[in-house]
Figure 1 (cartoon, helix red, strand yellow):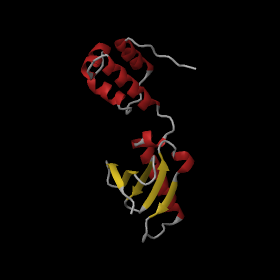
Figure 2: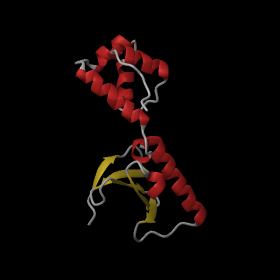
Figure 3: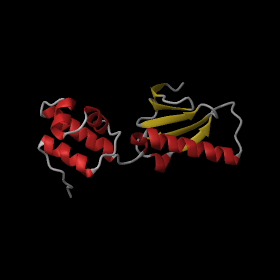
Length: 151
């Protein structure tokens, strides 16, 4: 029997779980149709596999294509960090959080220094907000850091 840990379910149609049986893999289920997709963490495009749960009638080709498209759009829109091979938002957010904590600052203190709202700092640190260079510059100035591209 496959044991799965529920990550979260924000809607009633799709359910995303991390597998314990396949290291570094995810299972997304369309509860309405019984279509399941298994893929490796941050490697969706190269290895996703769709299948149908037992005792479910195979939908026609057009319906199957729509289900796959809907599931893929939902994953990319809501769980991009599990799908995309390089998640800059998540990486930058983690770096900001790490530096902020090293400096002993709270999110509120960093927000005040940067002239931003604490909620913005929170969503940036979680990698859920694609911030522009101006906001990154304000955060870098507040943390006394540089923004650079290393080769």
